[in-house]
Image 1 (cartoon, protein in one colour):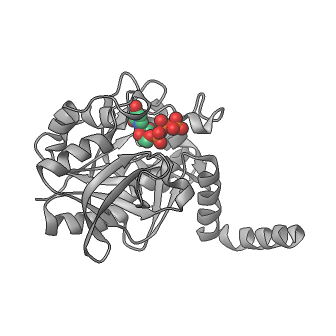
Image 2: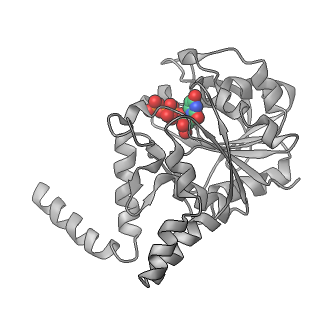
Length: 290
Ligand code: UTP
């Protein structure tokens, strides 16, 4: 079955990035020359998915506006003959069709995903977190889409994390059924030390069958009093199968201050015009450090 829609939850409060996120959504913080959310949407589009369901909350209108047509701005740029900028601004609004759904209270990622039920219906779909960047030759969403065509079961993207970071993630335990693909037999949200020997952490890419909605309805608040997607996935794996996929590429948690800085350096070095001079600047900085 073809996957046509991606749900992008952006309704969180972004407390790890305060005070920057008091009035600005963390997904709108700029990485070099684009807001984080644009990198996310570009990955979705590059994977052949055209419809994005944004789960938003009060104060997140800037995200919807970013992907909307801006008559005033486009007219101004056209009149001034700024063709390159006009093309760039137009391309953003033509990237995707956006549907927005409000999450009225930040009751957790699982709750946010539940808000998409009527828009998604009885189809498989992606959940792509608005602050988790993946850099890879083949887009991560596309890698998962291909795997879904083989397995026809829900898949979570995972990466190995250092022992001392395990407690920050949803962790999966499972048996490797083919290189980098695991059949999940246990999930633990933010495990306490010693409660798992696995370091396979779920990152912000999920390919889900619609049965997840029934599981979410039956999920009670878990860690932090929030309705956790990981808990609903735990139910799903008992009713159908659930797989974990060690994707090809690297990932930056841009919702975290350090992750955001790392992403900025990565994308600045990759930038066609800024990469060269920025590399020289960094080399100079590093030589002064040592
Ligand atoms: P995070 O925990 O990373 O985001 O949730 P947060 O809550 O915004 O940030 P902190 O932890 O307070 O700094 C993962 C994703 O789930 C979304 C967030 O927007 C983020 O993309 N989310 C989380 C919701 O949409 N609704 C929620 O109730 C919770």
